Length: 236
Image (cartoon, rainbow, N blue to C red; front, side, top):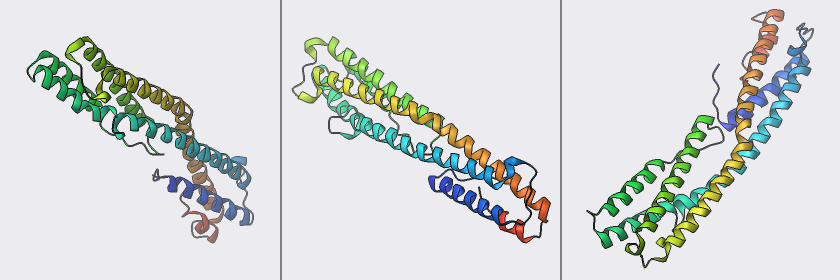
C-alpha cells in the first residue's frame, strides 16, 4: 500500500497505529504467538517512531531556516548575487562594448550562474536526491560567481564601476557571506539528512508490522469477524 509522504500523512499513520494498539488491547483471546505482533511491542515501535518524527521536524526546521538565510544572499535581497548580475553585465557592455571578449566572458559566466539557479523547492518530505541537487546548484553558483570576481579583477582599470554594490570589494564580501551561509546549511543538513532515511525506513517497518498484525487477526477471528473489521481499514 502506498502512502502520501506529507507531514499530515505521517502523523495520521501514527494516530492510526495508536488505534490499532487500542483495538488489540480489547480483543478477547488475541494470541499471535510472536512477541513482535503483540500490542506491547507495536506500542514500543510506534513510540520510537514518534520520537523520530519529532526529531525530523525539528532538524528540518533548522535546515530550512539556514537555507532561507542563504537564499536571501543568492536571490532575495536587493544586493543578492542574482540581482547584481545585470548591472555587472551592463557596466562591461557600456565600458567595453557588447562585442568585446570581456563582455562575452562575463556573459558566459552569468548564463552559467543562472543555469544553476533554477529553484528546487525543499519541503520536509523532499528526498535525499532532491536535496542533493539543490545543494549542488548553490555550490556551482558560488564557484561561477568566484570565477566572475577573478575575471573582473583581472580587467584592472577597465572595470571601475561607480555603483558601490558591484565594486570588487563588495562582490568579494558578498561571496564570503554566501560561502559562510552555504557552509551553515551544510552543517544543518548533515544533522537532518540521516533522519530522512530513518523516518522512511521506520514507517516502512511500522506498515509491515501492522500488515502482519492484521493478517494474524484475520487468521484468528475470520474475515467476516467484528475483530477483523475493527483493524482492516486502518492505514498505517
